Image (cartoon, rainbow, N blue to C red):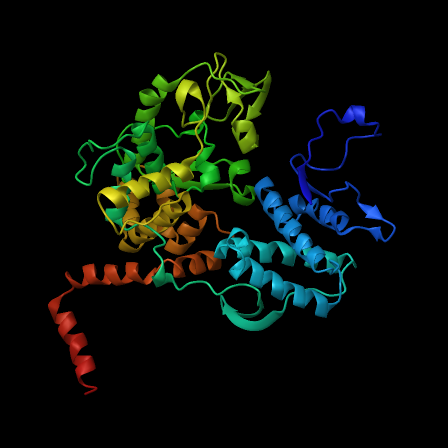
Length: 474
């Protein structure tokens, strides 16, 4: 079974009345004979392709999700064909097929075995496919068993559903999910080619350490996802305030580069933003070149909000990630913030972060974990919550207001609940999502540490009185 990624380029020569109603880069499944039906009627690939075309308007706008779902469907159809089970077979057939599929993908041949996250993606994709097929009247049975229950959410009793094909998640304490402050500093040093003491590491053989350290600080300081910070344009960097400030500086996340295309504003601290501006003025300027992609989008009259792209005024927020990779200046050179040789864009931060973590582990700290861009996002969440709990940002906002700065951000920091602030920074739809997210990151450590720090300055008489209350129980 083959997977092809659709492109409408040249459709006028296909003999059609109009352009096909298929999104660009949409996966299309083919059988090896390139047929979608035979004497038995439409084949399973036809139903899968119809479902894939609904993804952009049903909660999966990213082409990366389309590809992952298409590959999951392909593997499932191949498995069913191997066992001569139809995709819309009986409940008994589908359940048996799912059992053998799970056994093969979780403990079968090594080249077919899936990691935990990959199996979860398979279950998500197939669940969505069969839900769609049921609603369209194509499927009379599904292979999954769903358990129902109830739980309290914001004071309301709501019904929950759990697909039993999913694996149990590891407990938060068995896996490092974020970097503590000392490890975060060690990671920044590693990206910059420095040792744990902040001095030059003579064994470092990497390239562009200034760029790497700045981008690492940017993601640790903003909590942006990999897709978001990898496609930032140099013109989207906020201006640096005239004076250093403890109040964070707002940073608008590009809408079409954000997960789910959700508009949001995060923030960055003054020192990290100053480092970005220093990189732009020095290191990035030295990397400028005449590089051009195959189909360049030439930008003129660029400013903070947009520019004239191939002669047409366009907002940066209206550009997709793949379009951002094609943006070049009039003399060539990418407009992305992070550049490689000859002005080429650099986006492979996952590989760079993992290599840096491995070098730190081998050279300096054996306990240092692997670091992916999303672990930096987790680190931002925990560091931000810790400052919110300690009142750091509230004190900074009070100082800003006292000196005549009546900015909306200062007012927001003074009035909003810490969880609501973090919800907005991370781009979650609900504070419940933020609560669940934090629960998996050992958030109790932050409150425990805050109490320990507070305890040191609490009036001794108050502590003695509290001890007396509990002593009376003896």
